[in-house]
Length: 354
Image 1: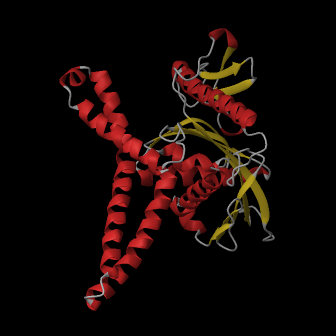
Image 2: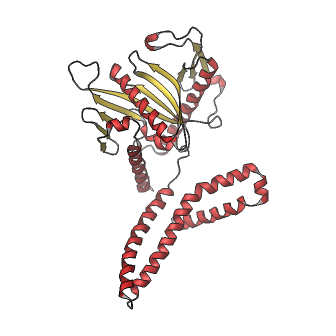
Image 3: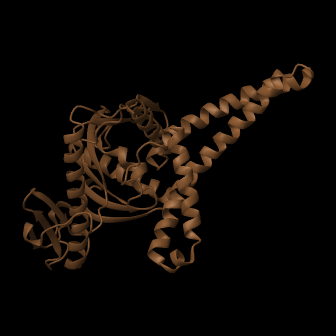
C-alpha cells in the first residue's frame, strides 16, 4: 500500500509542476485536465503526508522513551507515543478507504424513480412521503431537483414520480436507496385503528451523458397523447405528453408534466439514457460478480431494504441492522446518519474483499 502511495505522491508533484509550465497553461483543455487530476489526489496525498509526519513524531517520542536520563521527559514521551499510535492506526484505516476503487458514477446527478407498491391508496400516500423526504434532503444539501414525470392520485398520493436531483456527489449519497421501502402505520382512511403494511419502490439511477449511451433513433418508438390528471381527468386537449419505447429492450418512459411536447421528449430521453446506462452496468456487474453480493444489497427492487414503523417512531434498515427512533426527522430530510452508516458498511465490505 505504501509503495502505491509514494507513487501517487510523486505523480501529484509532477502534476503540480506540469500545471505551471507555459505551454500547458496555453492549452486550456490540457491544463484543466491536469488541474482536475491534481485536485482529485489532494486529499489522499495530504492524508499520506500526515501519516508520514505522525510516524516521524512517533519515532522521536520513542527515542525520548529510551533516554533514562530525564524521567519526566520519558513519562511525557510515553503518553505522547500512545496518542500517536492511535492516530497512526486511524490514518492507516483512512488511507485504505481512500485507496478503494472509485465509483465513476459517484459525482453524477441522479434520477430517482418512486412508485407505489402493494397497499393501494396507502402505498401511494407513502410514495408521496418518500418523494418529500428526498426532496427535503436535496434542499438540505443545496442540490437542485426537477420533476420529470408524476402520476398523482385523487387524495394526494403518488402512483409514480420521477425526479432528477443535481448536485455534487448526489449519486454517492443516494445510490443505496434503491429497493423496496415498507411502511407500517394506521392509514387515515382506517376507522378501526388497525395497522396496515404497505410498500413503495425506489430506483436511483446515475444520470447518463449523451456520449455515454448511444441510442439509435431507429430503435425508438415515440408516441404522443393528451396529458391526464388524477383519476384520468384530462389536463389539456393538445397532444403534449410523450411515451418513448426502446424497442430492443422494451423499456418504456412516459413524460407529461410539461405543456410542450418537445420538453417532455427531452425529459423522457434523459430518463431513457439513465435506464439504459443502469441496465448495461447491471449486466456487466452480473457477468463479473455473479455470486458476490455486497453487504448493502444489489439495489434490486425485489429486496426489502427499510421499514418505517409509525406507531413505534422507528426506522430499521435491514441491510445493516440499523435502527433509529427518529422517524419524523428522517421524513423531513434528516437522512445523513442512515446514509453515512450505509457508506461505512459498504467501505468495510469492500476492504474485506480486497
